Amino acid sequence: MEKDWQAIYSSDKLHSIELVKGLLADCNIKSIEINKQDSSYLFGEIDLYVKSEHVIKAKHLIGKNNL
View 1 (cartoon, rainbow, N blue to C red):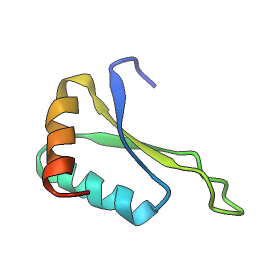
View 2 (cartoon, rainbow, N blue to C red; view 1 turned 180 degrees about the horizontal axis):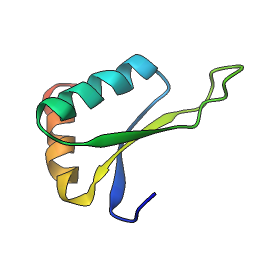
View 3 (cartoon, one colour; view 1 turned 30 degrees about the vertical axis):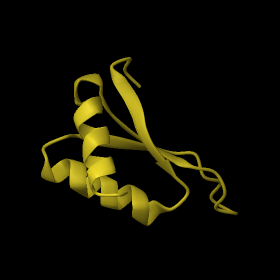
């Protein structure tokens, strides 16, 4: 992963990640997910990253929408 991406959200629930990704996409903020879950047992977390210049706006949107 490039250096200018920062983690802004983590969850163990894929649907929560998808909600946040959709919210960010609606605001033209590109995000990527890194899935660290074990495929057999579904434990671990999924991290969501955005480019550094979008971190503040992304965190504000997440907080504003209680996600």
